[in-house]
Every structure is written in C-alpha cells, then in structure tokens.
Image (cartoon, rainbow, N blue to C red; front, side, top):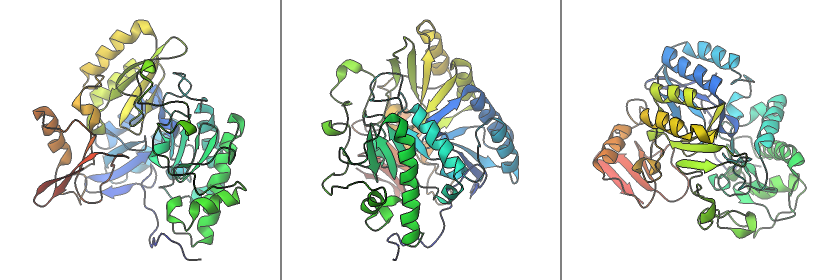
Length: 406
C-alpha cells in the first residue's frame, strides 16, 4: 500500500540531542511531558541557556522549551546537563515525548479525572519500549481530563476524559472508553497501532491524518468500533464529550476553553491557588526565569498557549508571588493585549523569515494597534510556524510588508 502522505524525507524535528542548525546557531528542543517542569530543572535550563546559547528560553506551541543559538558542539554539554536534571530520560526517545495535558488537571476540580498519573505512566511506557523510538518527532499525544482544553489541539492519539481520541476526534461512547488505571495502556496500544499501520502504508507519514483511512484503521487494530459520524471535535461546547464548557460556566472563573487557563489566579481544591502568567512572545528572559525559580513552590507547568502556570501557591503568598513575577515582565492581567499575541522566531533566528516579527509584534502591542477580537499570530513566512489552533488573525510577513489574514 502506498502512503497517503507523500513524505519523501525523514522528520527532522529538533530534540535536545539531535539539534537543528538554525540561522542563529543550534536549536535544541526539550520535551516536557504534560508541561511539568520542576523549579530545580528550570534553574538548570536557564543556566544552560546563559552559558551555552541565547540566554532567553523559548516556549513552543506544544508546551515544550527551546534553547537557541547554541555554539558548535554545545549540544553535548547541554545533553549532559539535561540528563543530570532528569530532563533526558532516554537519548533514543527524547524527540518523541510529545505529550500535552490539561494544565490544571487534578488541582482545580474542573476535569473528570486527574491525568497527571496517566501522563507519567505513558511517558515511562513510551521510553521503555524500544520500538516506539521510531515514532516521528511530530507525533502528538493529548491527555484531556474532560474539560475540553487540549483535545482541540489535534493530537494523533489521546484521551478525552474516559474516551479515546484518534486524530483529534473523540470516539463514540463505548468505543475505547477506559478506566483511569487503563488509560496509559490504551494510549500505548494506540501509539503502537499507529506505527504498525504506518509501516504497512509505507512508513513515511508523520501524523495519523496522513495515513489512508488512518483513524478507522488504527481503531480497527485496537479492536474498537468506529462510527463515521463521530465527528471532528469542535471545542469545549460539545456537551456530549465532557462536562465543562469554557464559555458558559462563569461560576468557575479562570478558564477559557480556547486557550486554556487565562491569566490570573485560580483556586485549587486543596485551598492553595494557581497563577497563570502570559510570557510575552513566548520568550523567558533570564530575569523572568529567575523570578519563576524564586516564586514557584515546587514546579511550573508550561502550556501549549505560551503561558505558564505556577501551582500550589499558599494563599498568604499570592500577593508577593504575583508582584515578583509582574516586576520581571510576566503578565497576569487577562485583559492585557499580550494575552492574545504570539509570533514565530522570525529574523535573525530563521533564515526563511522575511521580517523580525517579534520586534514588529512588540511594537504593535506598545502602540496599541493589535486587533483584540481574536488571537493574533505574527509569522515571518508562509510556513506559518507556531500558529495557534482555531480562529486567529495572522500577520504574514511578505516582501511588500505584512498581509493580514483572518
């Protein structure tokens, strides 16, 4: 069977060991399953960026962190530091640990289950299976606790509460419904089923949607029924695929189903609080990462929306924590224009970019000329790297200036 994708080159998605040669030097991507990063590990990352490359850490649209402008050979030292910090559990699997999860799962009580143990068990099983090192670096797993935040990001396999997700589609009730204890095993079986179907179709596809009848064929390999009318998931207002509607449940406050937790405070079930901060243009300066190391009680959670959650903050410390982070330039005001502005790397880091999109985006925010009705994403070329899912305004750099696409 001929592959439907037409891919004729291997996936060169960067990792922490296999770095990408960008215009400004080596680019390393550090995977953070579920976005979780301990304060100690963050301190290691910011030190490595300062010593080995660009001091600023870059957040990605999959909740990972990148180190840019690495000097030739610096990736060896970077990998050693990451290994010592527990951020590189497997040299062979490090590019395939692409796992996005509901950031506040298990803390704010809005989901159907706490998916943190599911993410940890899947990641451990992934790294323990030698065959899964062959996954493409673009393969994505989404673990949604049922609130509807990460399912719309279009994972190849995933969970939505107790339901299986294939190629961004929530499977019908009864087809792939699992208990929390069996969730990681189901995800691992679905991942292996993708690889088996990929091999049968020629072994070139990067994503499940690139396979011929990929969703149905993977479902068949899992011995689950598949209803063709299951439909593409359209957001958190699908009442039949979860109990949380991010637009209508005003009484629970700090959640926007389109972009995850919004900037500001959210109460936790244990009486503590979680603070979501916007990282302007997805770039952690050294001052900002230092402030997070000082402010976070134990860990931070990097989200796919280029925000960071600081969980488990004692209520008595909420004021000092917020003051420390905002003084460093992080944003806690949900009404700030930064809450809806993102950009690709642009010049000088990307050789294909036609403009310094970050500088232009920053100038637009400071001038107050950014459209406010939808998220705005600035891109340096037609590859549209890092574009957010869903409707947004695109500022596309061209040889003749910016083209506005909405």
